[in-house]
View 1 (spheres, helix red, strand yellow):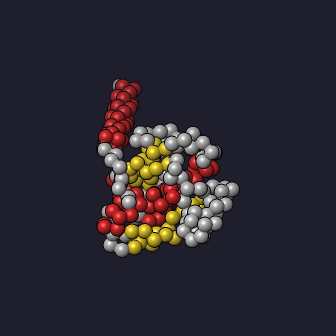
View 2 (cartoon, rainbow, N blue to C red):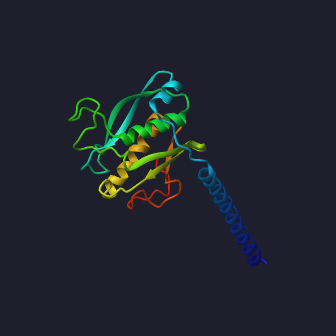
View 3 (cartoon, helix red, strand yellow):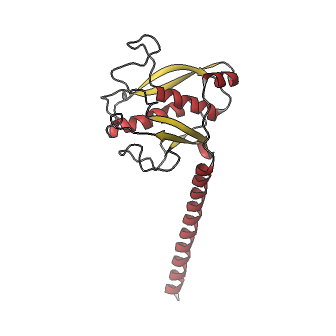
Length: 205
């Protein structure tokens, strides 16, 4: 009789685990479908459109990769202050930040003030990567949908691929309090990696 009770209890526990697991799986699946089904219309981030919605200037801190630095080193990313349009909508503010990160750093370069620097920083990526859409989900999740073209010669290994991910993630988290973690889509769909080296199946914190 005791053995039967143990068997029944064990069966109930297994069934409970399966039910909870299935429920969580369905929730995640529905969330992902909602993201993918939302129309990724072109984002109007022209300066004229942003200026109309702006309430002034906002000082933000953006992060850029310094080439040759190891991800474990505190100098892996370099901070740069930037003045952007102050926007009340956090999603629109986040999109503006990602756009600026992809443009590259704007310290004094060979062409003068405002020109991207050459040397130990990540080159501008706007010709290879573009922001298709950005969504703010519940529980502090930002979903960044990147339009990715041919990255050959731009992202050549694990370090530079991680740098792209980290520059976007850290810049968003630093400036948008609502964002606690960042998940990436590639060309509107879930992808194993951005450029073949670093898994993006899970969100980055």
